[in-house]
Image: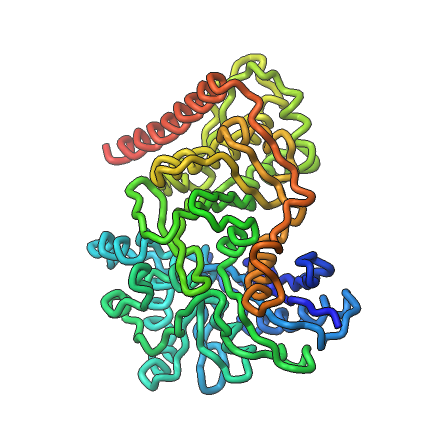
Length: 501
């Protein structure tokens, strides 16, 4: 009988069920969205029960869609939205409040209280102090949800990331577990000693007993029949944060391997090997995964607006009717036009980290038209990714000859060629775009003994863009981008100075 690997990719917008065969081929996919709960204060939450119900539902849906015997599923993997924070009662299984989504800034004032300890936090966790990470979110829950503090005092409170909620809820034994890639994003985990840091937990007032056991990403986290979806329990044996899952799905397992995920924003991540390196130039350090008893680390940089720039062109300024138009219009623009666009709609992310910066067009002349403006917007995506690729080269001391990419904008041939030219590296677009879920599925399959880690990763169907532009020209264009960013930051600082006069 054929055997299959089932995985879910539980993301910010919804949950995907993915089914892979013995050769690692995706044979079916099912999706269910969940609500984005936004309060009058702008707080963003998710319903944990809805996420759990959708997880079971997409597993049922994808098995039915594939038309296979559910008993042929050999193992289960999970990739999940990182940093979104869950709290529940370990005795009843009931959430004590909605999950606080990673992008929610309600814990900003709590994070600010710990500013004097920011360097200690960064040294231990590799992360810049921010309400983006779960530590401050957990402290907010403990201070603002009365039931949470009562449950913490009685030892019944569970605090964790979405993977730990799913593992606890789905396993027969209610295993309270997380993997290293998720634990490392909490801002409570010592990434060198691979343990929860007692001093950081005390700083954020999070009791150690409220946190899950952290372990290797290819561990057997527990057994599940997915609430009756499967006729027998199978191991959950591949758990990864979504961006880490994409890195694994790209087979970026060698130090120096790098990938960029193009979504609303972007995550650029480089495998830096088995030693911790801390950057002082806007990158964070985290754990890629723990596999086979060994841990690898990554540099990561996050960008606020990449693919969202194309949405802005379509939905807000209406210069295009369809996202696919952007590449054709950019290709038709005057190549000599020197318009630059810095998309600081809500500040600039890595490596500049200026939350108050605003967007800027510069270099516009009388002959700049629609095509040239669209080109500047498309190219702004490539420039931002190149900022991080160049910085990671410098900080890691490693050359980058290939950039692995995924996400909707990778279908834009103009952007991908421009990205290759600017980054001075081949850009590799995979056949399959479900990289996060695929990474978790492949890891589960390897852990379960169904896949060989040497043969499962295939290059079939890849599209590779090689640099074509003369290096002198690409470097001159990039220098123009750096000037545009400097103008953006200078303009912002002048505005602040005016306000203080």
